[in-house]
Image (tube, rainbow, N blue to C red; front, side, top):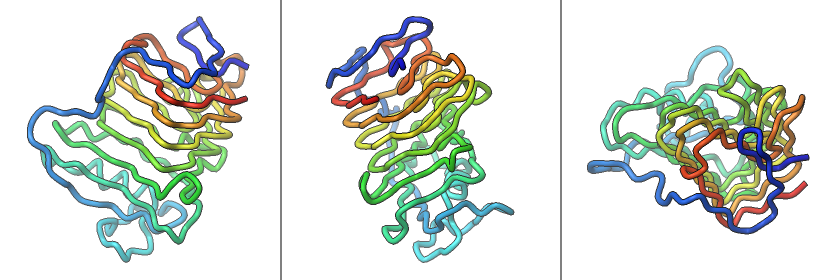
Amino acid sequence: MRLFARLAVASFVLSSLISYGVGGLIARAGATQSGPTFFVNAATDNASTYATDCTVSTNTDCGIDDAINEFNQDTTVGNVDTIIFASTVPTFTVTDPTMITNTTSGVSLSVEGNGQSETTVSGNGVNTVFAINGSHVSISGLTITDGDGDASNFGGGGAVSVAPYTASVRVSDDTISNNTSDDGQGGAVFVGTDSGTSMTNDTFSDNTALDGGEGGAVFINNDTDLVTMTNDTLLD
């Protein structure tokens, strides 16, 4: 199984440092300020309609999908929004995924788990967990598992799928395991053309690209100079 691939050329990577030469990927022009914090307290998404009280710390109905929906509506230039997870819920399941699509100038999102052993986000075996299109996003402190991407979702990526020409994405201090891509590329992570992406201190294991796909862990579609992997561990 190929763990890492770029287009049709695949490499088996087990080194602790892989770098293609880009630095702080979440840097933005102009002043920034703290934006709203969205509290994910529900173990599953609100299937019938979006919750609207995710900024209330005591809410009982805000799932991941609901928090992403509220972030997508933030139009305050320079806001750095945050999604945090209730420490009393060990596993959050994405049942009705919403793509991260906020392209307002200078707006960014930080998705912050409580630690890899404390916060698990699951795609339930049927969904890409985080699909990102055009936004500045950082994702840290999670176990991301049981995601299932396919070629129709930009090209693959069961855990994280980054659309072509997306602003910047940082994935750090996560465990990314047991994800698949059906008829697509990158069982765990797919990075589209011209998308700045960094992966740091992550552990990849048991991720698979099915049906002839390349990159069991990571697939980079062109432009490897925009992608860094630093101190990551890639396992079968």
